[in-house]
Image (tube, rainbow, N blue to C red):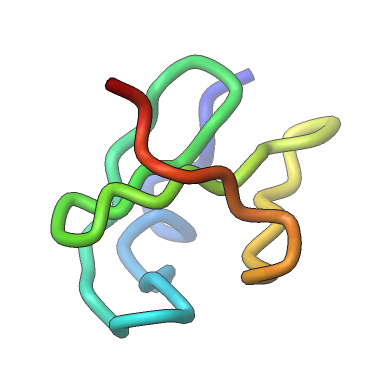
Length: 56
C-alpha cells in the first residue's frame, strides 16, 4: 500500500534526521544511512529498534 505523499514529505530518518525517505516495497529507506523502516498495514514504523540494516 503506497504511503500518502504528504505524509512521506514530513517523515525523516529518526537516526540521522535525513529526508526524504524512499519507498521500497514494504519499507521506507533512508537515502543517507540506508536503514530500512517497515510499513505495517500502511503505517510507517519509524522506531530505530524496528529498523533493519541496509540491504546489500
